[in-house]
Amino acid sequence: MDENDLKRYTVILGAGSGVLFQPLDETKTYILSAKHVFYKKDSNDRGADNEVLVSSVDYFFSDKQEDLISCDIKKGENYFEHSDENVDAAILILNENLGFNQIFVDERTTSFNEFNLTGYPNSKRNADDKYDKQIISDLNSYNDKLITLRLVVNHLDHEQITGFSGGGIIKSNGDSLLLAGIQSKTPNGPCNGEIQVVPIKRFEEIVHNNNLSKLLPSYLSNIELLINSVISYNETLPALKPKLQVAIRKQFEQVKCELKDIYSSNYIKKSSTSSGGIKSKRFWTSFLEYALIISLLEVDGFNEDVLTKMNLTKKFIFSDSSKDIYDLYSEVLLFASENIDNNCQVLLATNLTPNSPTRRRMPASEVNLNVGNVVDTETIDRVQTSSKIKEIIHLKAIEFDCINSNENALNQYSLQQFEEILTEIKRLVHDFFTN
Image 1: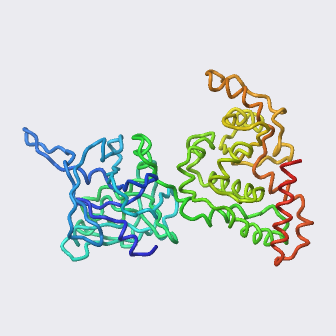
Image 2 (image 1 turned 45 degrees about the vertical axis):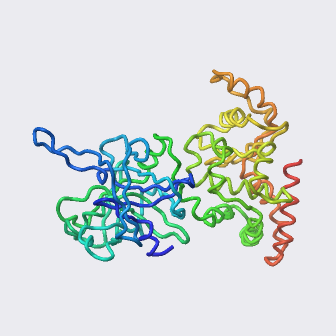
Image 3 (image 1 turned 135 degrees about the vertical axis):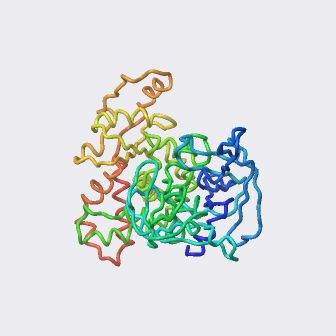
């Protein structure tokens, strides 16, 4: 993705701008913009001006800037705005797939290096090419409702900044784009190098509160970043580390799944003990580590069919709870006790790794179920089915207690013998789960 893609994903929207975004539902395309772009002043009987929602809005694509497309606005049907009147955020839904599927949300709160403000300022509305962008220089301030950013250009007059409203704070990220926010209302006078931006999280709230199709997080845009996290091996013998990395990167070729497809599966929704878990980078790094482990055990590697099958016997669970290990394991036993076979092994990922091998792998019989919160039939049923769980294995136990505990033997191989290393790792992992 390059400068042309920043432009391609940015549309003229009425007197402002908007950003094209394909959500999880591949039959839809969103236009994310500022709420005030969809309003106009209307005088009442007493001559006072009120802001009223427009009945329709015109939009233009970057490559067809004279081809007007008119869209009726139906609040609650194809138009949704943030419920907080002070949050300048809205989503217009187009019921078609326009192919803008390489853009992802980025909930950053710190550096905005290499980000740009994109849009169609008033100063260029009469030009053949009405598009413009301004490079972001620094972050001035951040809170839950508004980001203040500084532009490289420290002075833009009203005509040069007006029209950017609703434009994206966006950057190229290899083969994708990242969207961190949307430009809010522009100042009445010169902007003095500062702009105010609605964080992308506010748009996710619109999606959540109106049960709309989800905005895809940036963690799904570049699987290589997640793989690099999985194979960091910072606790491994330094001489063995590069050998392991070469071997495991080769094994990742057997992990054949689209994370965007996995994201929409019912399995994933039931893999995190908290509703926000699947939005975290740690969740997806852990899921890829789980997929890698399963690929080491299965002849067919890892794909969605293998995931469905292995979910019954080696179930992946993610928890971002801060509870102590026994309370956490008690919670996981209840949570995981659905649609499993007898002697199921739960592979658990957490924010913190237990220090002791006996805490990284614990028989279910040693975990006392906390039934104090058992208040409904479903939970009572899970108390019964939890007996099907054989043990809880922390995901990092495979690295620490299976691979690292045999690191001297593995280190006897040379870097060029990565196939032999991989064969030995598969044997060790198989023995780990069967013994």
